[in-house]
Amino acid sequence: MSSLFGFIRPVIGGVIRTTSEFFTRLAVIGPKDIRSKRFGKFGVGSSISWPTGSGFGEEWIWIGEDVLIAADVTLSAGMGPGQEMVTNPVVRIGDRCLIGRGTSIIGHLAIEIGDDVYTGMNVYITDQNHGYENLDLPIGKQLPNEQPVMIGKNSWIGSGAIILPGSKIGDHTVIGANSVVTGEIPSYSVAVGSPARVVRQYDGTSWERPES
Image 1 (cartoon, rainbow, N blue to C red):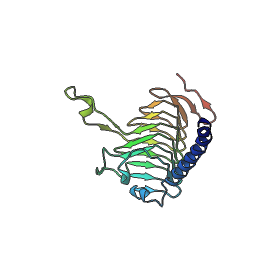
Image 2: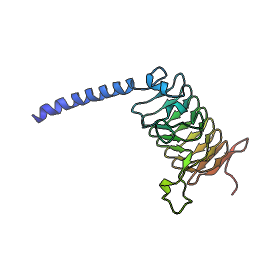
Image 3: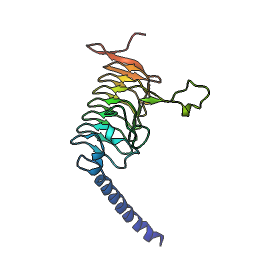
Image 4: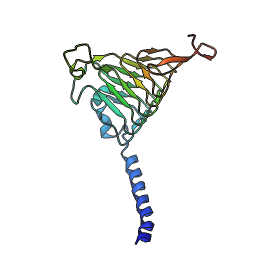
């Protein structure tokens, strides 16, 4: 009996894997799919892999052309379904971007991601933070603070990085894995750490370490 199971198990396992891969590819969301019509814009050649992360407010989210959004990515605009937003788009993803698996992009006011931006896995980007100033209220019940977030073109955001409200990342900039960005990072630079600090910058001829 055990030898029969040992023969059958790989066969059944192969069928399950092949079937799962087939339906996963079939479930990818593209520009012609009904699901893509929920978005404010969904560019030609773009796709969202299956399974998707949780999300809502798609009408306030614009996706450029030839964008690849990996599986388990959360895209949200607002606090919940049906909320009317004061800006449009709330989240804009430029052309030819790659959003890594497990990433969350949570917008409430303005998140602007430039063309050709790549992210690693499990990146978190938000333009809203909890208020904490009122000592008579739990932090979770206080009005949030919102500040726009901008990520310049041609940039790379490493796996596990966190981009917080008010962050402005320049063009062709690297944010190291697990870094936390809280302010402005100039163009043509490499920033790492928590909070992220510039450790290398292009001076017009070469990449140099900034003076202390």
